[in-house]
Image 1 (cartoon, helix red, strand yellow):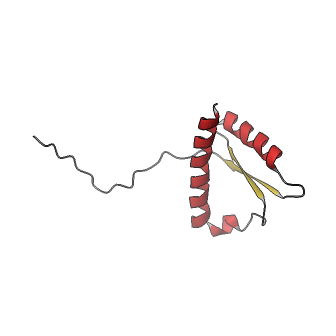
Image 2 (image 1 turned 90 degrees about the horizontal axis):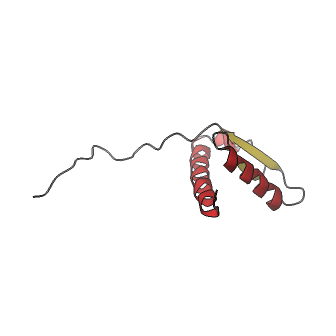
Image 3 (image 1 turned 45 degrees about the vertical axis):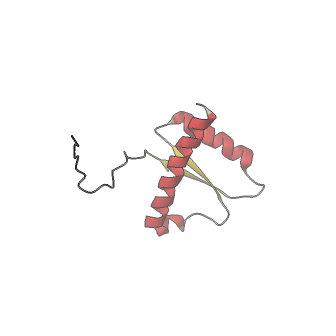
Amino acid sequence: MTEQELVAKNLILTTEFDRYVLEHPEFAGQIPLNAQVVLLPEDDPELCKRNLELAKAQREPGQPVVYVRIEKVASPISRLVNPRIEQVA
């Protein structure tokens, strides 16, 4: 996995995690202040491994760590409402 792929995949995970936390504040309440949150996608073992390695390298001394194990990210659903195609002659 290239660095660009790593960044792109984690950007999607982070965005989806942020959305989840906004919709489920009780979930966010379980995360200690200043914790390092490590997103571990179970359906992508390589990304999971890389995120664990990055977390270990970036952790501050004494910082609490929280692993968020994610079964998968569902396919994105379009937010378009009733799109129509109009061909122009």
